[in-house]
Amino acid sequence: KSILAITIGTTLTIGSISASAQDVNSRIIRFGYGLNQDSKQGRAVQTFTEEVNRLSDGKFKVKSFANALLGNEIQMQNALIGGAQEMMITSTSSLIGIDKKFAIWDLPFMFKDGPEADKVLDGKFGQAMLDGLEKHGVVGLVYWENGFRDLTNSKRPIKTMDDLNSVKLRVMQNPMYLELFNQMGANAIPMAFSELFTALETGAVDGQENPYSTIQSSKFYEVQKYLSQTHHVYSPWVMLISKPFWDKLSNDEKTIIKKAAVISREAERKDSREQAEKSLAFLKTKMEVNSITPEEMDKMKASAKIVIDAQAKELGQDLLDQFFAAI
Ligand code: EAX
Image (cartoon, rainbow, N blue to C red; front, side, top):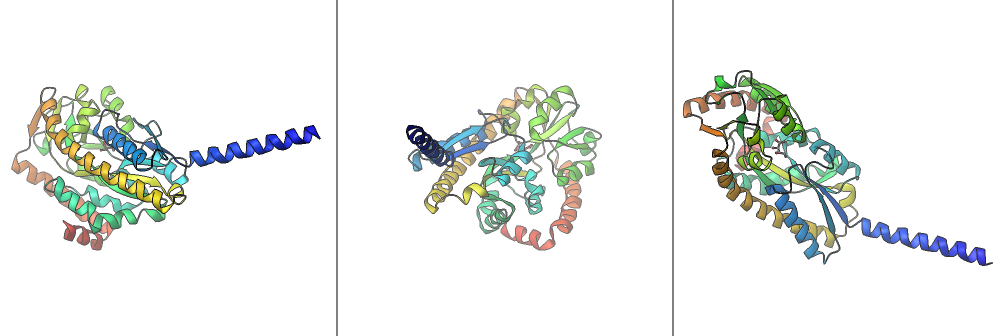
């Protein structure tokens, strides 16, 4: 009799422990990102963490993982789809494996400034793009800003398109970038961001392209001598949540996540725009910085035009027309 009581007691205890553990686990958000904690990405993840905590009265707990600790962008995207990780920030460029339409954001020389990009990203067009992700297993919440991309390398100052000749340039894992820089004469090499610092340090690649603040926070100036202000693409980031996780949340919980996401977006963009100036000033003390003459810019834009036309075939002229109409 007593053995039976113990057995039943144990079973009940185990049962209730695992039930409550599951309950708690379902409110833990593992949030992965690629840059370090001291970057604008890290700061905005912190803002999101605090806001979710505040709005949910501590019910949601965000555990954040910087420096691609949970994997590079493509690995994390797949973890979200499979339900092994709840949230992440990714560049839109590496999302093309999930939804090729996301290549639209990489078209070169499209936006004149951040606010113009915001209008398209936060408007109907950008929202429809986010909505399109859901059928692929991830929910797109908001866009953050990485910003206008500029070129760094360790070989020579890039002042003309000819200077790019045979420079081994790391690009994001996206064919548009590969074509764009090969078209301009470089030797483009696709690689995950998490491998980039080492590749620059060891000379596996000569250069890379990213916004000033990302060049600063990732310390690329330690292994790169020249910075050329090409401003060739405006890069957004996108905040994603796992669809299997999202589907388990109540409507109130979804509202909390959405609110915190919007607050983090506003904070991140403000930070990004203030930081761009500061980072450029900082980089000028560490690197040789040059601008590109209007004539050379025109040559780069002519190369870009070839790539844009190729993308029109790939993505459909319809989508491009909608995009252009939204700008
Ligand atoms: O989201 O991979 C890259 O170069 C991106 O611009 C970014 O810094 C990581």
